[in-house]
Length: 256
View 1 (cartoon, rainbow, N blue to C red):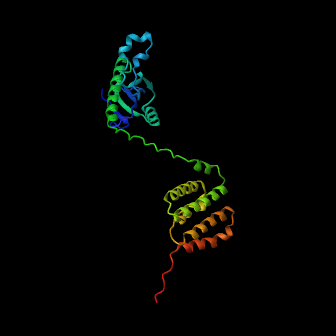
View 2 (view 1 turned 90 degrees about the horizontal axis):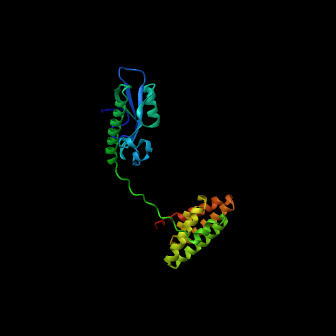
View 3 (view 1 turned 45 degrees about the vertical axis):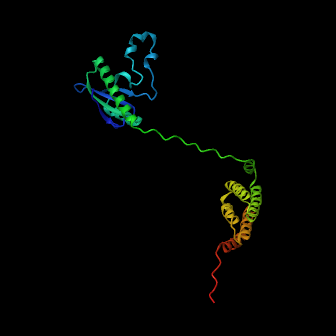
Protein backbone atom coordinates (compact mmCIF):
# COMPACT_ATOMS: atom_id res chain seq x y z
CA UNK A 1 0.00 0.00 0.00
CA UNK A 2 1.76 3.22 -1.10
CA UNK A 3 1.53 6.37 1.00
CA UNK A 4 3.03 9.84 0.88
CA UNK A 5 4.27 12.25 3.54
CA UNK A 6 2.19 15.39 3.96
CA UNK A 7 4.36 16.36 6.94
CA UNK A 8 7.75 14.95 7.91
CA UNK A 9 10.81 13.62 6.13
CA UNK A 10 10.43 10.23 4.40
CA UNK A 11 14.19 9.71 4.85
CA UNK A 12 14.00 10.31 8.62
CA UNK A 13 10.65 9.11 10.03
CA UNK A 14 9.94 10.26 13.59
CA UNK A 15 8.52 6.89 14.66
CA UNK A 16 5.02 8.30 15.26
CA UNK A 17 2.58 9.40 12.58
CA UNK A 18 -1.04 10.21 11.83
CA UNK A 19 -2.40 8.27 8.86
CA UNK A 20 -5.08 10.04 6.86
CA UNK A 21 -7.48 8.30 4.43
CA UNK A 22 -9.98 10.13 2.23
CA UNK A 23 -13.40 8.70 1.40
CA UNK A 24 -13.94 7.58 -2.16
CA UNK A 25 -16.15 9.93 -4.14
CA UNK A 26 -15.15 12.95 -2.08
CA UNK A 27 -17.41 12.44 0.92
CA UNK A 28 -17.30 14.63 4.02
CA UNK A 29 -14.42 14.38 6.45
CA UNK A 30 -11.46 12.00 6.59
CA UNK A 31 -10.60 8.75 8.38
CA UNK A 32 -7.57 8.84 10.69
CA UNK A 33 -5.49 6.55 12.88
CA UNK A 34 -2.26 6.97 14.83
CA UNK A 35 0.78 4.81 14.05
CA UNK A 36 3.59 4.47 16.57
CA UNK A 37 6.78 2.44 16.48
CA UNK A 38 7.30 1.61 20.18
CA UNK A 39 10.77 2.49 21.48
CA UNK A 40 10.64 -0.60 23.70
CA UNK A 41 9.91 -3.94 22.01
CA UNK A 42 6.92 -5.83 23.39
CA UNK A 43 4.80 -8.82 22.52
CA UNK A 44 1.29 -7.46 22.15
CA UNK A 45 -0.27 -10.90 22.18
CA UNK A 46 0.55 -11.59 25.81
CA UNK A 47 -1.53 -8.58 26.88
CA UNK A 48 -4.71 -9.87 25.21
CA UNK A 49 -7.43 -11.07 27.59
CA UNK A 50 -8.16 -14.82 27.50
CA UNK A 51 -11.40 -14.22 25.62
CA UNK A 52 -9.33 -12.90 22.70
CA UNK A 53 -6.85 -15.78 22.68
CA UNK A 54 -8.12 -17.06 19.28
CA UNK A 55 -7.04 -13.74 17.79
CA UNK A 56 -3.50 -13.82 19.25
CA UNK A 57 -2.05 -14.72 15.86
CA UNK A 58 -3.41 -11.43 14.53
CA UNK A 59 -1.67 -9.38 17.21
CA UNK A 60 1.32 -7.21 16.17
CA UNK A 61 4.77 -8.73 16.53
CA UNK A 62 7.43 -7.37 18.86
CA UNK A 63 9.03 -5.21 16.18
CA UNK A 64 5.85 -3.98 14.49
CA UNK A 65 4.29 -0.54 14.44
CA UNK A 66 0.98 -0.20 16.29
CA UNK A 67 -2.00 1.53 14.65
CA UNK A 68 -4.28 3.05 17.27
CA UNK A 69 -7.10 2.49 16.67
CA UNK A 70 -6.69 -0.47 14.31
CA UNK A 71 -9.66 0.82 12.29
CA UNK A 72 -9.36 4.54 11.39
CA UNK A 73 -11.88 6.89 12.97
CA UNK A 74 -13.73 9.76 11.31
CA UNK A 75 -12.48 13.33 11.73
CA UNK A 76 -14.08 16.47 10.35
CA UNK A 77 -11.36 17.72 7.99
CA UNK A 78 -7.83 17.28 6.70
CA UNK A 79 -6.98 20.73 8.09
CA UNK A 80 -7.80 19.54 11.61
CA UNK A 81 -5.57 16.50 11.21
CA UNK A 82 -2.70 18.61 9.85
CA UNK A 83 -3.01 21.06 12.76
CA UNK A 84 -2.97 18.16 15.22
CA UNK A 85 0.15 16.63 13.60
CA UNK A 86 1.97 19.98 13.65
CA UNK A 87 1.09 20.58 17.31
CA UNK A 88 2.33 17.13 18.34
CA UNK A 89 5.37 16.95 16.06
CA UNK A 90 4.00 13.88 14.25
CA UNK A 91 4.58 12.74 10.69
CA UNK A 92 1.42 13.03 8.60
CA UNK A 93 0.85 10.25 6.07
CA UNK A 94 -1.59 10.27 3.17
CA UNK A 95 -2.88 6.75 2.50
CA UNK A 96 -5.10 7.71 -0.43
CA UNK A 97 -8.84 6.97 -0.75
CA UNK A 98 -10.94 4.24 0.78
CA UNK A 99 -14.55 3.11 1.09
CA UNK A 100 -15.33 3.85 4.77
CA UNK A 101 -17.90 1.05 4.80
CA UNK A 102 -15.31 -1.58 3.84
CA UNK A 103 -14.09 -2.31 7.38
CA UNK A 104 -11.89 -5.22 6.36
CA UNK A 105 -10.23 -3.08 3.70
CA UNK A 106 -9.68 -0.27 6.20
CA UNK A 107 -7.95 -2.65 8.61
CA UNK A 108 -5.80 -4.14 5.83
CA UNK A 109 -4.63 -0.76 4.52
CA UNK A 110 -3.88 0.47 8.03
CA UNK A 111 -1.82 -2.64 8.83
CA UNK A 112 0.11 -2.40 5.54
CA UNK A 113 0.95 1.29 6.02
CA UNK A 114 2.00 0.62 9.63
CA UNK A 115 4.35 -2.15 8.51
CA UNK A 116 5.94 -0.01 5.76
CA UNK A 117 6.27 2.93 8.12
CA UNK A 118 7.99 0.72 10.70
CA UNK A 119 10.40 -0.61 8.06
CA UNK A 120 11.27 2.94 6.96
CA UNK A 121 11.81 4.00 10.56
CA UNK A 122 14.02 0.98 11.33
CA UNK A 123 16.13 1.62 8.22
CA UNK A 124 16.61 5.25 9.24
CA UNK A 125 17.41 4.38 12.85
CA UNK A 126 20.21 2.04 11.76
CA UNK A 127 21.95 5.00 10.11
CA UNK A 128 22.14 6.97 13.37
CA UNK A 129 25.70 6.65 14.76
CA UNK A 130 26.30 5.28 18.21
CA UNK A 131 26.63 8.06 20.81
CA UNK A 132 30.04 8.76 22.24
CA UNK A 133 30.55 7.20 25.68
CA UNK A 134 29.81 9.56 28.51
CA UNK A 135 32.85 10.86 30.34
CA UNK A 136 32.39 11.51 34.02
CA UNK A 137 34.75 13.97 35.59
CA UNK A 138 36.39 12.65 38.71
CA UNK A 139 35.10 14.58 41.72
CA UNK A 140 37.62 16.89 43.32
CA UNK A 141 38.98 15.40 46.51
CA UNK A 142 39.04 17.98 49.27
CA UNK A 143 41.50 17.74 52.10
CA UNK A 144 40.62 18.55 55.69
CA UNK A 145 42.28 21.94 55.18
CA UNK A 146 40.15 22.65 52.12
CA UNK A 147 36.97 21.72 53.98
CA UNK A 148 37.93 23.98 56.83
CA UNK A 149 38.09 26.99 54.51
CA UNK A 150 34.41 26.64 53.62
CA UNK A 151 33.42 27.19 57.27
CA UNK A 152 35.57 30.31 57.74
CA UNK A 153 34.35 33.87 57.71
CA UNK A 154 35.75 36.23 55.09
CA UNK A 155 38.09 37.81 57.63
CA UNK A 156 39.36 34.40 58.72
CA UNK A 157 40.00 33.47 55.09
CA UNK A 158 42.07 36.62 54.58
CA UNK A 159 44.09 35.82 57.70
CA UNK A 160 44.67 32.30 56.39
CA UNK A 161 45.60 33.74 53.01
CA UNK A 162 48.24 35.92 54.67
CA UNK A 163 49.67 32.86 56.45
CA UNK A 164 49.81 30.83 53.25
CA UNK A 165 51.47 33.67 51.34
CA UNK A 166 54.16 33.77 54.01
CA UNK A 167 54.54 30.00 53.72
CA UNK A 168 54.88 30.30 49.95
CA UNK A 169 57.53 33.03 50.13
CA UNK A 170 59.50 31.00 52.70
CA UNK A 171 59.33 27.88 50.50
CA UNK A 172 60.53 29.82 47.47
CA UNK A 173 63.44 31.36 49.33
CA UNK A 174 64.42 27.90 50.61
CA UNK A 175 63.90 26.20 47.25
CA UNK A 176 61.40 23.82 48.84
CA UNK A 177 59.32 22.69 45.86
CA UNK A 178 56.96 20.49 47.88
CA UNK A 179 55.84 23.27 50.26
CA UNK A 180 55.71 25.74 47.40
CA UNK A 181 53.27 23.53 45.48
CA UNK A 182 51.16 22.84 48.57
CA UNK A 183 50.91 26.52 49.49
CA UNK A 184 50.01 27.41 45.92
CA UNK A 185 47.26 24.77 45.89
CA UNK A 186 45.73 25.99 49.12
CA UNK A 187 45.91 29.64 48.02
CA UNK A 188 44.05 28.70 44.81
CA UNK A 189 41.36 27.00 46.91
CA UNK A 190 40.99 30.09 49.07
CA UNK A 191 40.84 32.28 45.95
CA UNK A 192 37.74 30.37 44.79
CA UNK A 193 36.03 31.24 48.10
CA UNK A 194 36.94 34.94 48.18
CA UNK A 195 35.29 37.71 46.13
CA UNK A 196 37.07 38.82 42.95
CA UNK A 197 37.62 42.29 44.42
CA UNK A 198 40.58 40.94 46.42
CA UNK A 199 42.40 39.94 43.21
CA UNK A 200 44.00 36.91 44.88
CA UNK A 201 45.26 35.69 41.51
CA UNK A 202 47.40 38.84 41.19
CA UNK A 203 48.58 38.41 44.77
CA UNK A 204 49.62 34.83 44.03
CA UNK A 205 51.49 35.90 40.88
CA UNK A 206 53.38 38.53 42.90
CA UNK A 207 54.22 36.01 45.63
CA UNK A 208 55.63 33.57 43.05
CA UNK A 209 58.12 36.09 41.67
CA UNK A 210 61.81 35.46 42.16
CA UNK A 211 63.09 39.04 41.80
CA UNK A 212 63.95 41.71 44.32
CA UNK A 213 60.52 43.36 44.17
CA UNK A 214 58.60 40.18 45.09
CA UNK A 215 58.49 40.65 48.87
CA UNK A 216 57.46 44.31 48.77
CA UNK A 217 54.91 43.75 46.00
CA UNK A 218 53.42 40.82 47.88
CA UNK A 219 53.11 42.91 51.05
CA UNK A 220 51.36 45.69 49.11
CA UNK A 221 48.85 43.25 47.64
CA UNK A 222 48.13 41.82 51.09
CA UNK A 223 47.73 45.32 52.50
CA UNK A 224 45.29 46.08 49.70
CA UNK A 225 43.22 42.99 50.61
CA UNK A 226 42.84 44.06 54.23
CA UNK A 227 42.07 47.68 53.34
CA UNK A 228 39.25 46.50 51.09
CA UNK A 229 37.99 44.21 53.86
CA UNK A 230 38.01 47.14 56.32
CA UNK A 231 36.48 49.40 53.65
CA UNK A 232 39.38 51.86 53.82
CA UNK A 233 38.81 52.88 50.23
CA UNK A 234 40.26 56.38 50.53
CA UNK A 235 43.81 55.00 50.79
CA UNK A 236 43.48 52.57 47.89
CA UNK A 237 44.47 54.91 45.02
CA UNK A 238 47.89 55.63 46.56
CA UNK A 239 48.39 51.93 47.27
CA UNK A 240 47.46 51.03 43.68
CA UNK A 241 50.06 53.52 42.42
CA UNK A 242 52.77 51.89 44.52
CA UNK A 243 51.78 48.45 43.20
CA UNK A 244 51.81 49.72 39.64
CA UNK A 245 55.25 51.26 40.10
CA UNK A 246 56.72 47.99 41.37
CA UNK A 247 55.12 46.01 38.55
CA UNK A 248 56.54 48.32 35.87
CA UNK A 249 60.04 47.58 34.55
CA UNK A 250 62.72 50.07 35.64
CA UNK A 251 63.44 52.88 33.15
CA UNK A 252 66.58 52.37 31.00
CA UNK A 253 69.71 54.05 32.21
CA UNK A 254 70.65 57.26 30.44
CA UNK A 255 73.57 56.99 28.05
CA UNK A 256 76.73 58.73 29.20
